Length: 217
Image (cartoon, rainbow, N blue to C red; front, top):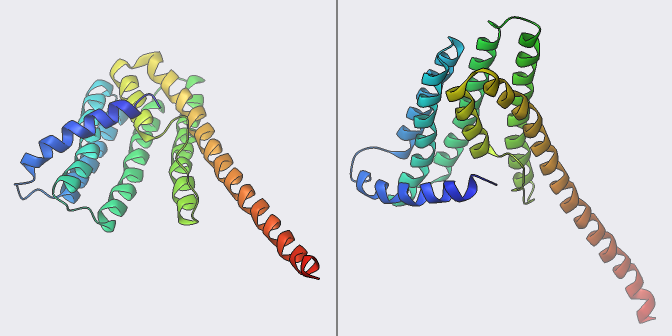
């Protein structure tokens, strides 16, 4: 998607930086936890209406999300628990940001208030589903990498909405409410197609096995 090449560029430069930082006692898991703490701070700032400061802090939190993996690779410290912790805390981070936005939208006059809160909850559910569908699909042996709006895209547009504020932020929330759920449905369809292909292949194999004895006779 539109942030994929940018994210790859950032990761390459982050890994160069992490080669130097790898000589320090800093661990990838510590960077992950710092990123979570910054995200909680950003969510609190958003809840109290400090939207631009929330956007700035969220930039640093997103940077930590990139640097933890880069540090793990540069120091050969990649291991399953680190990946598990990173993915789990990512869900806490996303949930915190959406809850912070919902708390801010509660202070807005109706009827826009209700729509914004509902859209924030829909975006939260969609974001969680995007991650869950992929994790569940991969645990069953499927490939699940497609999607209109993955996490990097969601972070970028959220930061833009917070920095600009006003109706741009409202538009971002409405957009996220739609595209996160569309992305989840895209992934569900991707897995369904793979499952359908597997089922058809098994049916062909069963037909071939049933036909084999008759051919021998």
